[in-house]
Amino acid sequence: MTIPTHPVDRELIEAAADVARTRCRGDNHTMAAAARARDGRIITAVNAYHFTGGPCAELVLIGTAAAQGAYALETIVAVGDRDRGIVPPCGRCRQVLLDYFPAIEVIVATGDGTRAVPITTLLPESYVWTDHQLDTQ
Image (cartoon, rainbow, N blue to C red; front, side):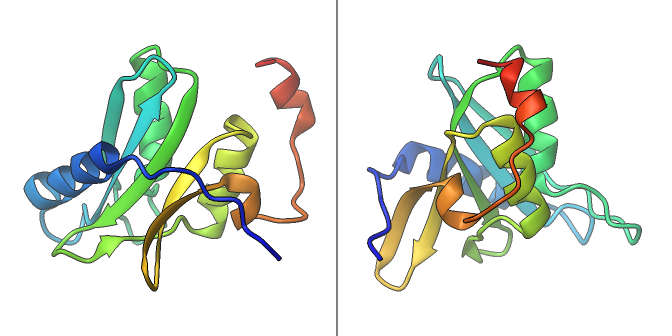
């Protein structure tokens, strides 16, 4: 099976890495995410870890983007603190990203570098929350 890939947004990776390096402190904030909005803006966020399962950086980013009026995200990446590099989204984040942004691309690390893949590649044969998506078409 051939997995479709697209050019990697290096500026986005650096934005997430910079936030992870400068804003992630201690055990409460260990991941940073950056996304490019359709208008070109880069939005960043960090996770809010809590023993009850606080939100991942990708989920915080979705809310941050909405608060800034960015409702169309094109690409997203998450980077771990302590130079852990690019980290793929968890299953919950994959489903939420698909529900909110069915055409979003996710930057992931591979054995030989990085690649940008459609969210549908990371969540094949998935449930689609079509009622929600009809409102955004």
